[in-house]
Amino acid sequence: MNRGQTVFAQLIQYISHNEFHRCVQRYDGEHGVRQFSCWEQFLAMAFAQLTYRESLRDIEVSLAAHRQKLYHSGFRSLVKRSTLAEANEKRDWKIYADFAHSLIQIARPLYADTDLGLDLNATVYALDATTIDLCLSLFPWAPSRYGHGGVKLHTMIDIQGSIPVFIDITHARVSDVLVLDKIVPQPGSYIVMDRGYIDFQRLYRFNQALAFFVIRAKGDLQFQRRLSRPIDRSTGLRSDQTIVLTGPKSSQRYPLPIRRISYFSEETDTRLVFLTNDFHLSALTVAAIYRKRWQVELFFKWIKQHLRIKRFFGTSSNSVKTQVWIAVAVYVLIAIVKKELALPHSLYTILQILSTTLFEKTPVLLMFQRYDFETRIDDASKQLMLFDI
Image (cartoon, rainbow, N blue to C red; front, side):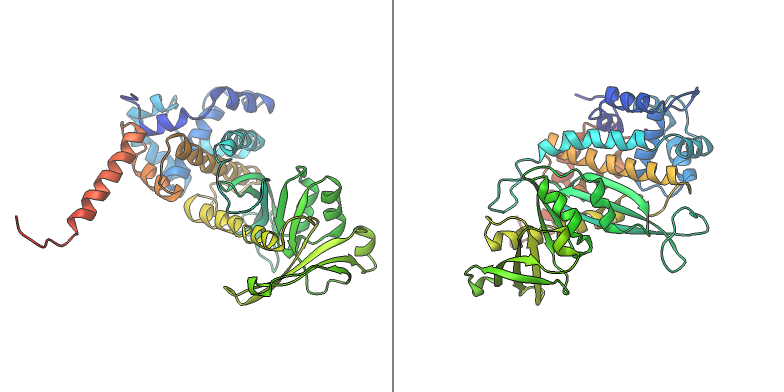
């Protein structure tokens, strides 16, 4: 089984070549291309993500060191840094965005049975944004504040499996709340947001689309209480109210009643106030849903630490977006492999093992079994011997 195939080649088998070529054809990605196809560009950039390459020269030298194994991994020739730089510069980043979305559609059903620990039979999404600082002189198209540069990743994840379902890449000055205009609400789903996304006109659109939101309220909210529900203060709840907005603008932009829940978190010694358009869930469930928002923060932390999205191989907008979307595709590919092979390891452990074994000719599942065996042997050797036999 998989004899003679490198680990890299085995990973690529989880990717649909036909789907990839459909994405290329959709944007005419190989018009006038004679050498170094979009597929080879994707493989080179995926290799860089999986093995922590730092530069185009790093990619070129590392792949050249395995030149005898490149052909069977999908490369028709050696990768030159100038060729890869030109491909990242000119080939439409939407090719790789569409392909990443095709992988997302494969990954999400694999994690559909993940227990969220919530008394809820609905999809929950967490929405947030993170900024990646850049040098403004090298990235003049990405202005930030205070004379710096940066790009912002507006991301919504399905918290079952922490799979991203929406990503919008903008310069850092773009307000977080504007991304709500690009999201198509899924009826019956829940979208969890921090108070930076407070915009009652946009939240009203979510309500009209039959989607639910759970969002943290700002301190200057103007409202009038209409109804108070009984609560158990020992659970951390402080109030559960139905309110109407009374601000001159907010009352027009969101003319319906809204639910306001106040909760005290002993863990953080913080009082939190949530707004939601769901009047049927228990107040504690609403608070538990908001706590799941932290998963998008963990997603940002993970991809920044373990994928190459803080140091870019090119300076154009197209090159940056290409690199980010291929990084997302690699993240989702690892998540797919984890489920397909029923691996108990964390994504971090899987990525670390793959990074050092990509060109070994070992079945992937056997490689992880060997890792588990070696780990158990090492742990056993550290045990104290009570008796000499």
